Length: 243
Ligand SMILES: *[C@@H]1O[C@H](CO)[C@@H](O)[C@H](O)[C@H]1NC(C)=O
Image 1: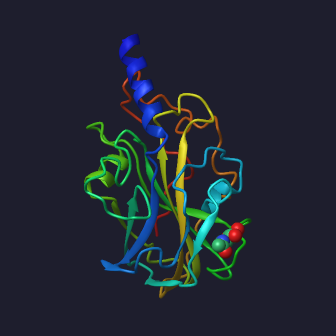
Image 2 (image 1 turned 180 degrees about the vertical axis):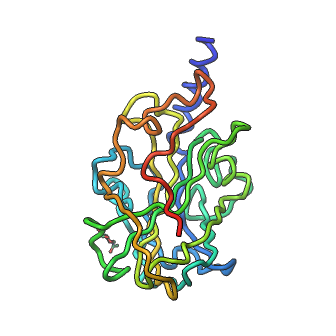
């Protein structure tokens, strides 16, 4: 077992140098909004690892944000949202075994929303986030990331139908756990999309802050992906808000 674990560790270290990913397109009810349209995205696809840093909100910092779209994507409360991830900003590349991400970067896929005065404003600190989607480990041993990879980078979920109309940021995230047995080690990949939510209702979800919602000691952040072979996983952050 020791030798096997060493090989796995060496393989994950070798691949982690290049096998990153960026959330780079939004679809509303199946309609593509355009590459990097309505998104804040870095040119470098590397992860954030410090959960106490402001870079855990919408990326930035070591991966400077180079694509700050001026577009705000319109979507009705209750609409179906599809996100699309790829290894690099070159987009879909069937010849790249690490597109949309290295298949060894297993972990959950998680999505939050936060109301914001203007979805294109530079400042993203102090927002109140609520979780609207999560996909962790299922009983067959498949992860949210496995399903995203099988789906060629796409993840689909719905916006809550009961939240207030207005401008929001959508924080969509993957946590890759291949090096998460000690903290820092888990790799957080996230970008924020800019939304104008129409319709909706008056329900006010309970919220959390970023940074703040995650801690290095969370069982879903310090986690051994390899041994013992995991049969359960506690997704970090609050419960998913439901109407
Ligand atoms: C994009 O916006 C962020 C703040 O959200 C800022 O730090 C960064 O410099 C901006 N990038 C460009 C190219 O304007």
